Image (cartoon, rainbow, N blue to C red; front, side, top):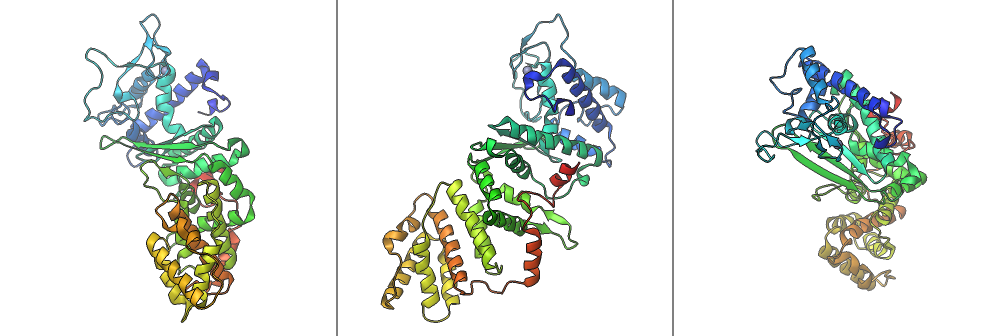
Length: 454
Ligand SMILES: [Zn+2]
C-alpha cells in the first residue's frame, strides 16, 4: 500500500493507484489462501479468516491451486463492466454496477444470521474503490490472528500515522508470521506514539479504537476512547522531567518478563492502555494503577521516585479530569496523627491504608485523628469542612481519596517515617536509574519499536 503513502486524502487517489493496490491485494490474498498450515504465510490467512470467514479466499472448500484462486480474487477488485445499469454505492454513493453479499465484506453477520437483503435483491451495490478498501482494511488495522483494531481520530494525520505503522507490521506478519513479531505490543501504544509524535497540532483531539472479530463464532466489537485532553497531557508529561520520570517508572513497573528474561508484557503498551477508557466502563484507570503502585507496601520507592509518580497522578487529575484539589491540609492531619500518635506509626499507617479509599471509614478516621491531635494540644491543619468533599458520594470524591493517599505517603516519606516494609534495594534502584531516562512511550522493548527501525 506504499503507493498511497504520498496521497494525503482519498480524493487524490487515481485509477492507477487503485490498480496497483488491487494487484497487491490479489497477490497477498492468493498467497495466504494456498499457504500450508504450518507456514508463516498461513498467519495472514488467519487474519483474513477473522475478517471474511465466508469468502472464497478463506472458506474450507476454497480451491488450493494458486492460478484458480488468483482469477477468483482478481474478479473481486476488477473495474465495473461498462454499459450495465448502476446503483449508488452503499458506502459512498459512487455509481456502481457490481453487487456484493455479506460473504465478501468484513465485520459482517455470521453464518447463523439470516439473509438481511430484501427478497429478489442480489446484494449491495459497491463501487470499485470501496470493494478494494474493504479488503485493504487489515493492512491499516492493528491485527492479531483473530481480531482487527482500527482507529478514528479527529485529526487525519494521526490516523495516517497509525495506518502507516500497521502496513509495515502487516508486511512483517506475511513474511515471518506472528512469531516474527516481538511480544507484548498493543494498538494503544501505537496510537499514543502517533499522538505524541504529531505534537502540539493535535491538542484537543480525541481518538477511538474499534476492535472487532468475526470468526463464525460470536462476533464482538469493543470500543475504547481517549479523552480530548490526552495529546496535551502527553506533551506536558514528555516536556517535564518529573512527570516524565513518573511515566517511565509506571512503564517499568508494568513490564513483565519470564524467567529467561524474555519480554512477556510491554510496560509502555500497558501504560498506554491506561489512557483509553472502555465504552462499557470496564477499563483500568491510570489513577487507580498509580494508587496501587504508590500504596504497595512491598515496593520501596525512593523519595524522588515517589514524588515523580505522585506528580504524574496530580497532572493526570488536572489535565484529564479537570480537578486541582488542595489536599495538603487534610493530608497533614493524617500524617501528623500517624507520626505523633501513641505507639508505632506503622500500626496507624496500616489502619489508614485499610480505609484510604472508603468514604465513610475515611471520614471516621479523620474525626478520630482530629480529636486525638486536638487533645494532644497540637495545631490541627484541617477540619471537617475541608474533608467533606472527599468523604461524600460526590463526583470525583474517589479520585480525590486516591490523590490524598499519595499525598499522605509522600509527606510521611519526606518526614522520614518509614512507609515501606523494606528499604529500597540498591541493585534494583541502579537498574531503574539506567532505564528511567529513556523517552516515554519509547517502547524500547516491544515489536513496534522494531518496526520503527525497519
Ligand atoms: Zn463506494
